Length: 398
Picture 1 (cartoon, rainbow, N blue to C red):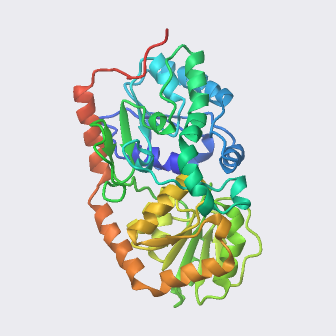
Picture 2: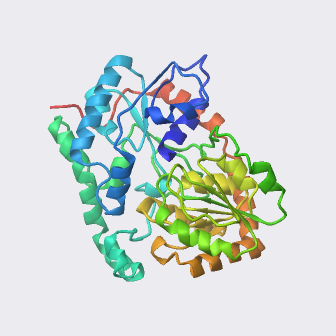
């Protein structure tokens, strides 16, 4: 969902009187869009369940055969539209299709993946962490990480070679930031970088509220005097932790609001109110604590609402942002392997009782508010178009 929301948020900042915006996203997301585009179309993507399974097994997100299909789909779209710039969010195949059509391209990627940041060594939730403590594996992961980054870059370079393009250095961080422009949907105070290039830009946290109706129980629940805890593990979080989260909350004097994101939820307690989707930022503002997977798609709206968070990270991307959350003072994290009811209850109790977490979240809300994506993004685009040289920077086919 995050990789749909951020392009939608950026597209919404562009005045249709000045910009022609052609938007491609899986058809299942079309009902959530609020704006009118020059053209709206479908986009081929991997089955979400397959994608999540590959992440859980520590495999490269996209195998070469999938990237090859993406490239063919994108070449068709580029030939149809002939854009002056194409912008993708985790659409790695643009590293192939855009250079083939000599079309400048931009990537949207969190700054925690920047090569200009010293990334902490955190082993993600993979099968081996079920048997060996992640704390013991982290030092080994720090040594082996270049090899993992090599393996995760390999499928894309295979596809580039198949289309006659030179390889990109075998480091996923270089691939994630390979565009003529790089847009970081973050703020520099939260994710510090060391001397990034001029074409790398922070564009704010890309706020965008899902146009989802409130459930019938909304007013009743909000009228309760008890603190509310908002639980949303999103479309990619470790849903297997949800039963333990609900058990932990069952003994606390709170009302629990759950957004399931269409995933199966069973055995809800008497203090639990669940629905498929909720307006994330508004719900966060009404709650005392947010429980999430720690990814920035949920983290930033929660902090923007001034609400502390408990993160339960699983995949590596969520671990990196959950680590930033804990460093920020606005929340805590419990790895999914350690997410027992007792540990979760202890962490949530601290977030409810200790005022320092809410104070930190409020300070971050004020800092984030200084970065207006609706102003920053159009300005960067206008300046780039005024001075562009038309290069994709990734080589032409042989």
